Amino acid sequence: MSSPLESLGRFARPAQQILTILGQGPRIPAALRGEVRARCGDDIGPGTLFGTLARLERRGLVEVIPSPAAPRAYRITGLGADTLEAELASMTSRGRRVQGFLTRSAVT
Amino acid sequence: MSAILRLYPRAWRERYGDELLALLEDRPPSPLDLIDLTRGAFDARLHPQLPETQPVTPERKNPMSDRLPGLAAIGGGLLFLVGVAMIGLAPLPSFDGYRETGLAMPVIFLSLPLIDVALIAAAVRRRGGAWGRGDTWLAIIAVGSTAVSMTGWPGLMIGFLTLIAVTATVVVRYLRNAGAPPWVVAGAVVATVLAIAANTEDDRAWLLAPIGLLAVVFGLISALRPRPSASVDPA
Image (tube, rainbow over all chains, first blue to last red; front, side):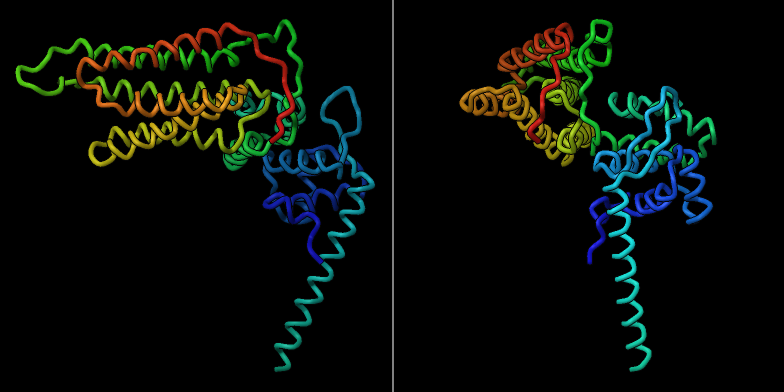
């Protein structure tokens, strides 16, 4: 099973992290950045953060909550939630394959 | 900070500019953040995620940034004419041979990337989109080949030939973008290559003057004409 976010190249990892956090509720960009750093240990730069958000928004995976003033919060869409689920399934499948390979290597 | 923000395309700034500034107010950028922002600006130009869909409004019509391609073409055309005049007006040697042109060729070399970049920017403006990867590479190669041509032999020949190829490519792209018929495109390529590559260190140098004049006229029209409405880029 291939990763649905693979096509995002270097933005795939931050996209995965952002979708995971937005899966728990809407966040403004500053909160997203802080949570990614606190929970994943990655410090996403501002250019990468907005580059990722632009890609996710263009693909309909996240949307901005309309508000008259910045900063506006982002939330995950239905399509984004499905993509996140598929991404997690892909990671689990990959993890199992790696575990199987390591187990077989240890036996031989 | 606004200087870095200006590196981003207009559509990007209008969509994300306020949010980015709010983020940076929350946590002032580190040197690594500044690098990331610069990288992000290049990314936004090379891989635009937003269409440039802003309509032309009277107050935004033909601002300075829209005039830059035209001004670059005028500058490049004038520089080209200066180079041609330096060759054409130089005294003939006492023996059969070429005129000693001194700085003329470097001046002409410097004018071509200006004209190239102006044509690229005008083509981008005409199609109402952002700079594509091809546009950026052509501009880089045009400027780079000029720099290489200043390094002396064999860089002179390598840079010069590359500059001719780039100029011909830029002319083709612009004319095709403008919907010119194939015979005009083919004719322009042949004329560009023959004119620029011709051995001009004698009275034939004046034959090159129309190129500089064309660039100046193109620049004047481009600088004074308002930005066209954005169209859908099939690419």
